[in-house]
Length: 147
Image (cartoon, rainbow, N blue to C red; front, side, top):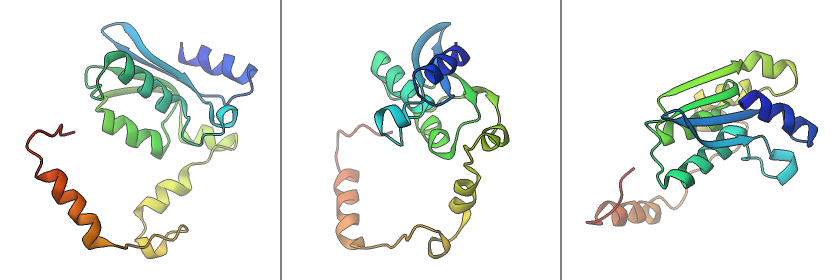
């Protein structure tokens, strides 16, 4: 199904990626890459599938789901998969296959490992005291939803 989504998406001007999330043998979320169609750099197939599954299940915790995707997830999607707590991912193509057609995410994997001052995007801490006050406020809430 994920491969079919990717193939149909190519015909509609989108990227060659599709993803499906399944829970108890039922599809609860699906997506295909809409980055260029929606002018949204976060509209990867896995992200859209996670959004749809979370909406359909009314839950951000997808720990009882499985993700099927046409390609090894990029760093952004991998982060979202961890945040959604999806315990199992099946993928078709790997990151080297993606790089071979111009979708090379390897530089992001390398950037993440660098100290802030060595990254290609300037990363500077600021307003630490003001920002930590917001965290303290949230930490002290008696009825917060922890995730």
